[in-house]
Length: 393
Image (cartoon, rainbow, N blue to C red; front, side):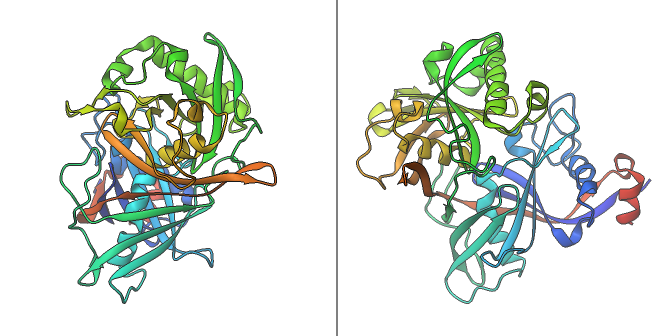
């Protein structure tokens, strides 16, 4: 059987890569998308490498984005994010990707989906996964989104033109509430682990925050060391399942085990001296807190941006476990510097009490992006159901 060709662009957004499709080039029946995305990315792959597709064997490189016309008056485009599991035949739509969000505005401009007649662009992005609005601000260069610039971001070699992402009213992206349980700190009763203090916060993406010391870690462990520690990874998986049920994301542990995209698990510690993946050192005085994140069962080499935003929001909520270890703030809008495996990530977050309840007004950070390839992605016809093949003739 012949392979099927689909127009696509391969892009880097921050520290992630993804295939980017236009809505018009995919079947109208979204139930048919999963098979196409898995075939294009190369999943499921029991070897975990995705060599027969465009994926890279880790969650940050196993992604698909879809961009189409806006369905809201306060947006310029709609953007849907798909997390393709590496070893399993499953595609998750339960969360957004902050890194790839930085590429969506430039993609829309370069594809002619939005007209820009000035040197600076503002694209209002409606993320359909979270029903939230993101403002992307970036420079233009001869009618296209700028690529070259002086911004260096942790985890990406070289520099690029900055994209400022502003997540508007990010609270409740997954559950509808900034604090899904109504508590700043919960005591989770985790089977096989015991009682664990956690701050369950939903800003940009739902996340469960725990202290590194509560699970026998220092907080500066690098991803490979974490992944090699089977006992800790098993504990973190059990904590994630308990948090999912507590947050109302899943009805029970069985359902939570299947919903792997959210909540993310964040491990936090005070500002600490740490080694980066590059071998360089982080001095404790250069950061405000230390963080590690697990998603889809894998430790991140560079923190997911939406989760970093959630961490910054949690750091502003007095009494949370993140606030507990964060360096005292120098002001309500002072940036928060997070020490992570790939370096230091700076996030802005504006959080306060509104009528006695915590409210996240906004969160912002800078990324770079680049279009890497444009043309057609080929998918094996043998890997697609008959109904999908009939649409893609």
